[in-house]
Length: 310
Image 1 (cartoon, one colour):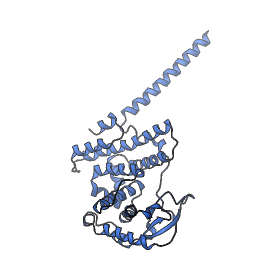
Image 2: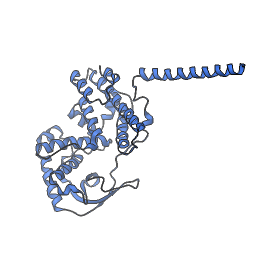
Image 3: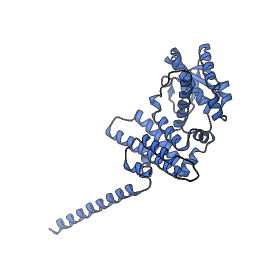
Image 4: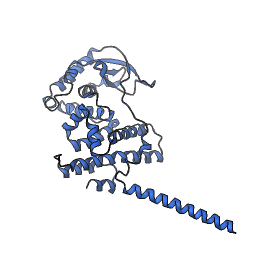
C-alpha cells in the first residue's frame, strides 16, 4: 500500500516538474527579444556557399555573339545606371565573351547541364550558354537570360558572398533593362526568397545604399550593428537553406512546419533590423512608409512581428 502511495507521489512530482519546465520554456519563448532567431539554429545547420564550378567549354557561336553584343549595348548605353553606380564593372561588361558549354563540374561531384540555361563564369569573364538549351531558339527570352548573366558581371564583387543577393541584384537590374527595351520579363519562381530578401533590405537602406554596401562588403556589418553579431549570416543562411529545403525536402506536415519556422527566423531578424535602423537618429527615414512596407512584405501574420515594428 505504501509503495503505491510513494509511486503515485513520485509520478505526480515528475508531472509537476515537467509542467514547470514547459511553462518556463514557454515564458522564455514569448518574452525574449528574438523569439525565433534566437532559438532555431537546429533548422539551419549547413552553410550553402556559392561555387563557380569547372565548365567544359563547347563551340563558339556567331549568333550568340551577335545577341550578346545587343544586350551589352542595352546595358552600356543606360546612363541612368551609370550615374547611379559608376563604381560597378562596366569595363568587364564591355569585354565579356560568350560560348556554348557542355556541362559544369562541381567540387562535390555533381554535374550541371540541364538544370540551368546559362551562367556567368567570372574567372574568364565569360557567359556560358548550355548546349541544347531551348533559350537559343527564343530570341526575346535569350536576351532576357543574357542580360541577367551580364548583370552578374556588372555587379560581381568578392564581397557578394550570398547567392541570394547575387541573383536578386541580377534580376532587379535585368528587369529594368528589359522593360526599357521592350523585352518580355517576369521574375523566375526560383528567385522567390532572393527577391523577398532584396525588397526587405531595400526598404530599410534604400536602393543605391544597398548596392554600395553589398559591392564594398559592409552590408553584413550594418545588419549586425542593428541586430546582433552574426545575425547577418544567420539571415542569409536560413533563407538559402529554406530555399534548398523547399525544393528538395519531403512533402509532409513536418516539412511545412520546418519551413514556417525557418522563414520566421528570417522575418524576426528583418523586423528587428527595420525597427532599430529607422529609430536611429543618424538615419533619415520616413518611418511610417518603411514600417508600412515591411508589414506588407511579412509572410507570417503574427502580432509579435507587428508589435516589434511599433
